[in-house]
Image 1 (tube, rainbow, N blue to C red):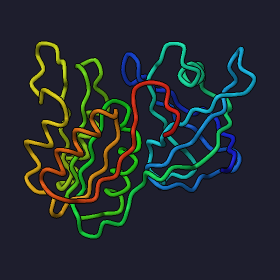
Image 2: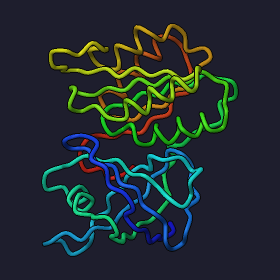
Image 3: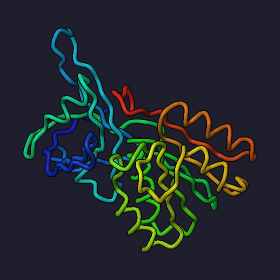
Length: 241
């Protein structure tokens, strides 16, 4: 993998524990990657003889090769989380990449279903933006599971995309909403079971915790056979993107 030097150009707190940073490439000045891939940081940890490696999926599309966006959550005492949350605007970082086999595939004329939990939205966001930018006419659906209202982010962005692109729709469901929530309630598996009637012309991308991936895969397999691409992810310290 290639080593890159970048500068922290923008920091955005998306929720109480989720942050987005935009890195501007310095050396080299651009990165060639496929939507869904990740980069990795080698982080020094006190008491350990060697740095630990933490990987984070790129949340932005390849159409802006001079910049990449990362989305990550705070993990107490997590080396990756501690490092990324310590960064400030103008800081320089070193990372390696791109890597990973979870990426957009050529599925012909199949419609696309993306299913995420938590920060598993990161690689799927890159994929969705890419397909929309390419002008693909295929129907694109995103089901995203979060916990409660304070965990919501990217909702306005997704709403704007659904207005601009009539073939894109999204549903965010909350597993433990607070009073006042009028949207979908429950786990994303329920959305798949209720709203996906046929998989005959579908390609599916799953990114999130292992339980979701297992349940959604089973729910889809019960409806028939279709390509399903998976990336196990969790709101903790990832060992891979």
